[in-house]
Amino acid sequence: MKRNNYRIVCVIIASFTFFVQGNKAQTPEQLKSYLPVVQDWTIDGEIEIFHPDNLFDRINGAAPLFLENNFREMTSMEYKKGADYITIQAYRHATPEDAFGMYSSERSSGLVFLPIGGEAQGDDKNLYFFSGCIYVKMWTNSNDHLVESIRAIGKSLAEKINPEAGYPSIMNVFPKEGKLPYSEAYVTSSYIGHEFLKSVYNAKYENAEGQSFQLFVIDGKSKEGAEAVLNAYFAFTEQATGYQEGALTIKDKYNGNIPAFWKGQYIIGVYTEDGEAITGAAGYIEKLTGSL
Picture 1: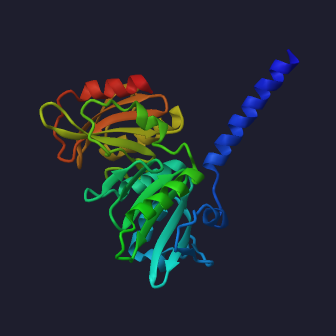
Picture 2: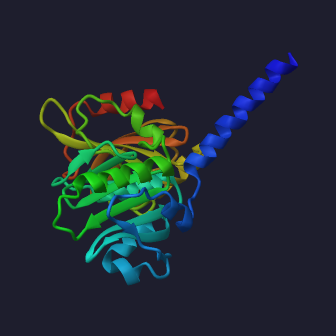
Picture 3: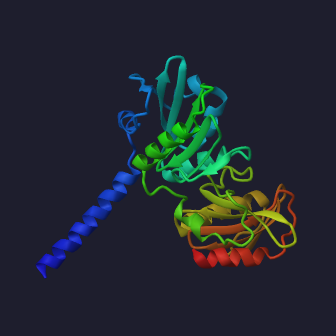
């Protein structure tokens, strides 16, 4: 009996250790140590480190969006070969959700999707992916064909940051029917223009009638947190409060009527840019609500 208990304890410790290692906030020195050797290229001995107070010095106008996604630290590293270079910028965020949110906000329809990290995009000179709390951007100035080298570096780096990287688990319960590929996203705040709509998971859909819409989940972290979000929203729309968990209609003068459902810590709903009523909206909400 004691031997069995010992084995159980060891399994728990090993699992916890793996979880911590997979999600820990790697230091700039650790990130540099993760870079693989690439033939004919040398890793620059110097690294640059940027924080919220000086990120503007490096990326200027793009900095506000990173800060909105709870940016903590950026480590800039380079491979060099003569005048050619491969630059790697590793942006550490507060949580894996924030890193995914930053990545998803910069997706481009002109790039190819790749199985690197939680998800990646790239072309012949660029690569972007997220893994754990890190969002990585890579590019080269070389005219040589380096696509395989860049992707090999990215894959090695992503696996060392977090070998189990993927979408936030809540994204896996979104209904698959009608969901547009690679449309999943996470918004830290100001979803559909409202500052009080925070921690929003969403994906784009198209129904059988050709109507486009977003299905979303707001995580209030607790039942009281979700109620506070609804109170703020209903104050904005000037609707009466006193509602209970269950189906709701939010009459947003800027975004049209939004069908929604309150379930514990979650608010589930359907949003369209033009406020159009979506055929089957209640069915989508019901499917997602039932999976939470």
